[in-house]
Image (cartoon, rainbow, N blue to C red):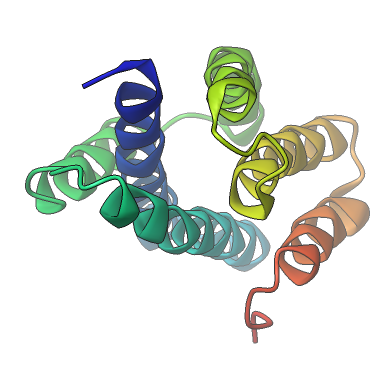
Length: 160
């Protein structure tokens, strides 16, 4: 596989892991507001994965067992569930730049750098970062709106 294929598979598998991670955290969360936010984060990851899958299929790439990243995400959630909310958000924000760099590289080397799916891949990472920043700045009332706006722009079915 070439660099494009490697980055595409990594992005797809990462979205599957992220969906399971956020959903797993929600299962462990006693705070209803935070649980709802975690479920919307899981929806963002799920939607992004579903948008990437046709690109993976079109490239003829075998991504292996999709259950593996989901299992890894649930295990990471279990290991992270006891973290205080600000610590979890700071950890998330510190991890995002490396993913964003890879997504930008994937977009840059794609046959069509303006591909909507790849633009949404980049945008979803930026939305998650803005969500976490709003939460950390004490603007929980605005943080969820960032995620809902991203999902609407990305054409996802609204979250109930």
